[in-house]
Amino acid sequence: LEATGYRYVGPGEAAEVLETGYVPNVDQYGKPKSVFYTPDEGFTSASQAQQMYNLRSTPTHRIGVDASQVHNIYGGNGQGIDGIEMITNDRIPKVDIQELGE
Image 1 (cartoon, rainbow, N blue to C red):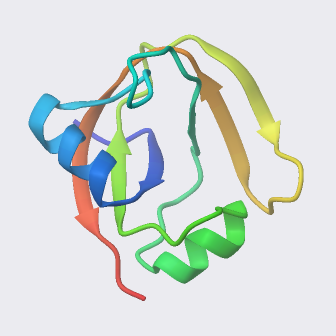
Image 2 (image 1 turned 90 degrees about the vertical axis):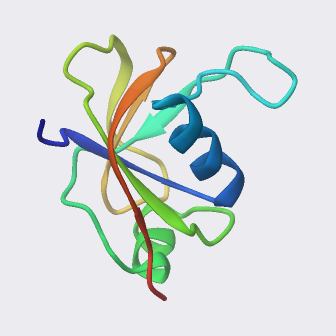
């Protein structure tokens, strides 16, 4: 299966994705949350991803996702970012996960 999108995350979410096989759509308290991802080509550099998508913290992992079955509630150029962002309220299946370099 080929990844149709990417999400850049820290170690906590990466561990959860490895365990469940899905990008979670709930926060640490179990409350529903929107999931941001991008259809852009994936970066292998944490600093490039952080700069491109204006991420608050430096990501440690890139999750390749299969977004072909999710219902997106937004798609476009987000405010303050250089790439395309998509937003869904669905869980997204993981295709692969990769540790990022600097």
